[in-house]
Image (tube, rainbow, N blue to C red; front, side):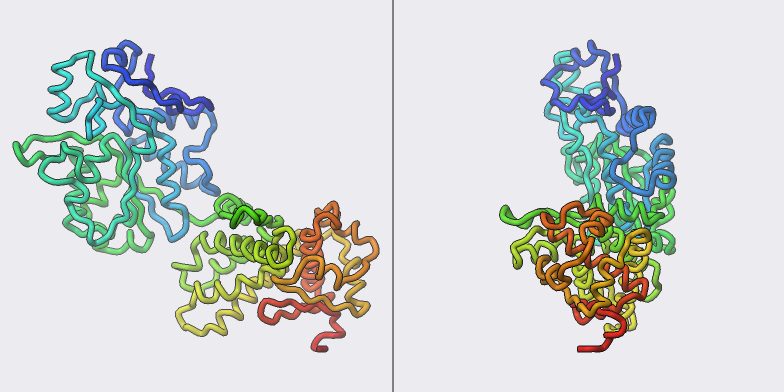
Length: 480
């Protein structure tokens, strides 16, 4: 029986979740255990995942038909891998996900700082220990969380940082310390040429020299790295010898569709209670779509620095800010924390300063951002309100009612401005709100969304002043 690539309690590859008990080399042999290098261990578990139809790396959206197949081919080929892409495309998330392809628990010779496999001793110390104890050699276990390390490369990173001092068998240096594991090197090209050359030599021979007696210490590691697209293509950024050692090359991209963008925002945004007395902010689906459209529009424009505008984190931060605005209003007005369209205006100031176009004209930049946001709102209204009977609200505006709203306007205050609306509950049900009396935040948000829809149809005028919105009939536009 081969125990090295079993299944966990959920039927996933990697072995049992519970820590195995202390055992011996003889017991492992008796159970049919065999040695696998870390790269063949990953390949073994990858076979199991794909055979079961499970994703290689969970929680990655839009990579299923493009990035993941490239990564899987490289892992099947037992290659070290470099991931190339622009900022905020999930390069680090992709590489950290390789943790899931390691066995949950891996056997090690007890006391080995190199995490040596009992059936593959690499150091003289381990060889001597097994020669003395034989099948009674004690065996311990390490969890996969300890077998993946990440290094942010800089020009200050030294050869010693990577390889250790004169005695690599002592476990000093990143590569010896992560023997039988996975090493992630972010921004590989930031390493100095001398360090790159040393790393290329290690990846070529898979062994270190012990300075005291010039003996060779084999290493069992998978090295994966990331670089920006422009940096990878720049001559001299990565020395030829090291470029050649990363035979696996994977390129990333931004979410290819609006639906992918929305799912990324849902999964990666962090919206939770600020303390035990506040509710978790709730963000309706139509607002998530608006933020996704806005983020994609900002990314596609050539006005802003792509280093900041292109990142998926821009949209994630925007969605989280909506949640923060809703939580603040909940505290001020003593109501549920439910985001509304009036919270969208809060995105403009922060985005204006964060993106900062090269020409430095903040007023022009803000105007462009406001235009992009309004277009995202209008597109979402057109896609979601096609069959909604907005005349239920529009009739009140045509009758001379003016609605003013902003991120600090309480939901009941907003609804009171609109007054009694015939068949209002019918409109709310069309917009997915079943009981407006019980959820005034959702009802107020639905009203604002309907008002935005009427503005998109040019059936009323919406004027924005700072973070405040003023909705009134077209005949009243400009009236104080």
